[in-house]
Length: 417
Ligand SMILES: [Zn+2]
Image (cartoon, rainbow, N blue to C red; front, side, top):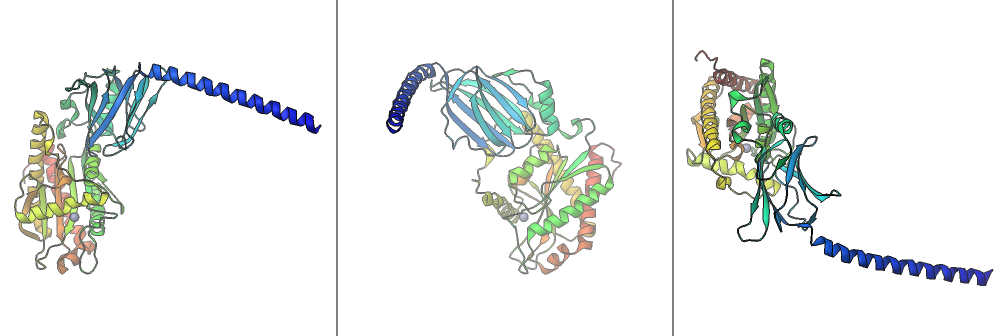
């Protein structure tokens, strides 16, 4: 029994060795084949992604001209790029999600390969080109995408036929809606943006009142007042104490096809006696040094997310975008003007209450946007007002009246005033 058992064990051991050896041999042969075969595969040799939550450019490098087909999928919003069988040699840190892109996945699909970009929300593919690299080193697929609304995404989805690279599927003119030509059934839409939140408390009074709480309380009041009118769709960029990067706030406004973005803040300043509200619009050149300093402070918010702040002035100049931006700017100015007029009846304003500077949160090219500094937390009287529900109600009513005038004017039904 004992010796027979040992022989048996030995036999099994030998058998196992043979199996291992043959498996190893097979693997060696297979990997030789694979190496030879790999040379015939398309090589994806590099991946770069730049931009923010409102706009991204993605460049994928290939060792030869790729045959590309792309289409959109929803739930979640995805861009799918079909490729011939591809060997992906991409750096993990390059494909790390950021900005408008929530996930990057790629892999083999049997008879082909696929690259899938998942959006943080709905987006538009502005451009997808296959281009020859100038240095003679292969080709690249360059994709421009920007934040859009669900409606715009669904429209592109409905209109899509399988699209090949170098053929642009959508004209920018159709995509970037300017107020009056928005979707049927689209109601005048206001996005309220309570400034700061989460790790970024914003300004703070010496008594410990924190800006992010004041702005949230005020934004809720304003939301309720606007909703009570019954004519507008009203959204908030945040309705609790969470951190939101500035470009994320802009993305949310675009997602809702906002006709107006109102960002609410409450600043502090060294001059304790200074008080009153201010309405800001976007401009490259600040209206005054104080406005510039304030914009710099507000723009610092992005540092809480560890984001590198880079100016996006290098953005491609596109005549259409430029026109829309100019139109948006004049809408912003007109709303700011109306708003100052309405606020002045209920709320104390500082000298020259309509000002401008380079606020990042006001940078949506197609959404008229203003930033309201409700008052100064460094001023005891302003602070007391900001904490007072009656005052908040009155101030929110003034803003609601201004929205009504602006919405009516935009709809072309204004009778003056
Ligand atoms: Zn602020």
